[in-house]
Image (cartoon, rainbow, N blue to C red):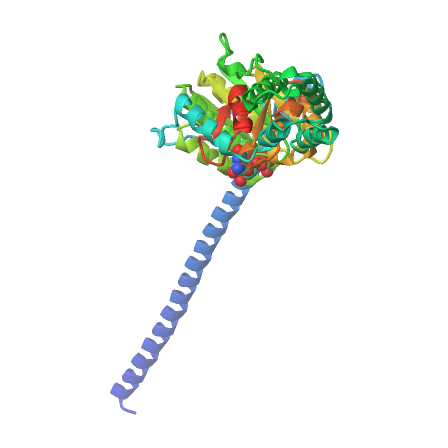
Length: 422
Ligand SMILES: Nc1nc2c(ncn2[C@@H]2O[C@H](COP(=O)(O)OP(=O)(O)OP(=O)(O)O)[C@@H](O)[C@H]2O)c(=O)[nH]1
């Protein structure tokens, strides 16, 4: 074979071997690089998971610590949920608070200016007069008849009972009306009306102090109001409307969404707050401890030197013992920061006497200082104003007269009686 051919074949074989060797080396290097990248990514993921676990462990420890501290600070019966979190090392505290409670700061400028007290009262007086509270008119039409018979007097009593005036008050009113010469003597309609108005005003209570404690001279600053009541009565709505009333008076308000049972309640309160530039302290976790929110809200209101703190609570409690536990804890924990000035029971006027039994349970569970009668606009049972005061021994301080943001008014006995007799 020609030498040149042999050299050519050797050269081709050598090149082929070199190419194969380069390919193998290249492949190994690429695989090694891939493996390295994979290892690095895995190490990063492991580190992240470990960090997350550590953060979670710290948050749980902080929550557990807070519960323990609350127990011990109250001698075994009292609680300071997030208060304990305040004493933790900084990172534990932050994690516990982030997990539990947040403050929804509204936009810096109020989006709405609430209606002034004067125009609100005028408008709501007219609304009350036009509302479905026909028992005054029904009474009036019976009492202006000539020669009232026994059955007429029975109709008077039935009318009062139907309007939820309550048995005791109805009997008392009928007795007084029967003795009234202006009625018994068949005087004119104006006299009957005047007499009826007087007696109804006596029953409603004309000289009762119905001011909110936050509005009294020398009120605490911040003044704390806790809203309680059965679910659906209008607590959250009333808390929002009440915040507007205070804002309209130039007061600085903070709200606490301690209704952690219904997640939407905190959103609802935040919406009310955002409209009038009121911050809302809430929990990001469904079913979080309501007392924890109440504690943070009271701490926030104190720190901000607010005029009023309004705390909304849940009403969905299985039994009296649970109710007492939950509301009692909210109160005790709040009182670690601020005294509680007012507990307002929100009662749905449309439920009438049916709502009274539950109202009594709430009154026993936390002790109430006033009643808000909501939904009076949709109720034919205005007499509940009389029976609720008699049975619970506290005044009706506010009435809800619609779903509108400014449809809450201080209860005005004259306006109410004029409304039912109009
Ligand atoms: N007509 C009328 N409706 C009202 C009044 N007050 C509240 N409502 C309505 O009643 C419904 C229930 O009100 P909420 O404020 O959610 O009741 P709640 O007691 O907070 O309910 P829970 O959070 O479930 O305990 C809402 O549709 C309100 O708009 C009122 O004075 N008049």
